[in-house]
Image (cartoon, rainbow, N blue to C red):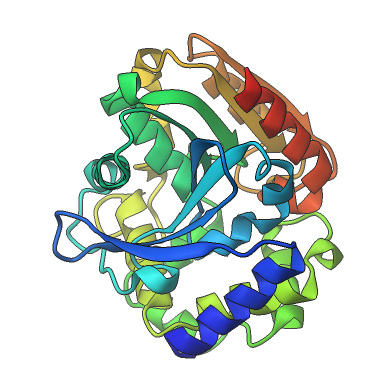
Length: 312
């Protein structure tokens, strides 16, 4: 899969939702970074940060509810989509996540903006909001922010173990070739409660994104950095991501909304309630019949909830 073919499939996926994004690149101070941005809609800006092993287009089912009132800015995170290669080995993931969001806002000329994040994107958003609370107007977290639970599921232990992950991606975990393959993989991982809810064009686009030459390395080296001890391992018991941020969450003083799938395999809603309780102004909505990507299982419910929350 090359970038041109992926871009074509991505355009078809956006068209399926009646959207035609403006796509452009922003060079960030780190010479290894170049963010590809997709922008749709008009109005006040909102930045949406996608999860791991994904691309900005994964937000598509959520966008129709927001595009009439907001300028939606969807970056492909480093190592994902059209942003190109990024190797996370040796990278301080917390510092990187906060710096990426900071440099992104600076490049867009935004002093302050609402952030929407899922999974690893949620972790990036939290890391930035702790470092720069004055720059986050509102914060929406859909699904478990990466590493919220005390222990990782076996899948992430495997993917986070250097050497084992390479073997897996050459054999059992080969990226999906089509929408059916993507649905099957998501069903096994519990990312959605009902994989039939993934539209064909979106499934084709996301499968293509997973087959970009740099996608697997970006994903696996990132997961390696989440584990303790450094480098990951099958016997790692604790995660280095959101759980490590909990003692500092009180610094985030903006309103925060959690939309947490009732069937999220990476953390039960009670995990989210415990995190929300550490924030000065937060509430959690449990999304029934939804997995780790609740806006794909329940796009109308999530779209309405996010739109109302952003409207204040």
